[in-house]
Length: 217
Image (cartoon, rainbow, N blue to C red; front, side, top):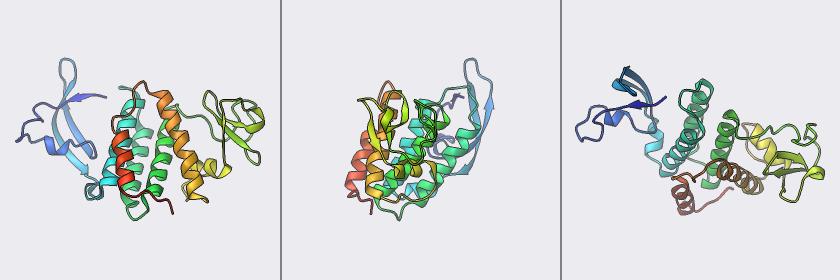
């Protein structure tokens, strides 16, 4: 749902500091002509760990922009809300990890958001024969999703079972570098094919990660 917060661009605005993009806030609203108006707020969580780490802050903002682009005003967002909150907490807790592994975990959260909103396909069954994917060579076919390699067409590319297992689980990847390459390509492919315009924060995220001397080990 969209709201209007009047006067927040003014330096002395009382609401401005509480309505940052990376914050959990309980809002008080009043009915307006076209949109409800924010009249008060209680800050529940400012996620302070993000503000002392540029990678965490940019990652959280990138994820917030993705959520804004794939969700629709007025739809039920209870599951999505819980997912984003868990993702932001995880981003803050990952600060000791190498930047590449943090990006890999961010891709998994993005995958879960896309799955929640219906933009990512089932990672357990073949999109062609609808049989389980385990114990067979798997491919990613952009127009359909995960398929058995024997049923893939020329547009597909191979994806390891380790990458699929990583997307399904909460654990670490068994082969960090290979899984990072495959999962990042997969998530980027879905986002670029889903959105009409690229995420504004994508370029900033890429530059930030490179400046951090990208490493997944």
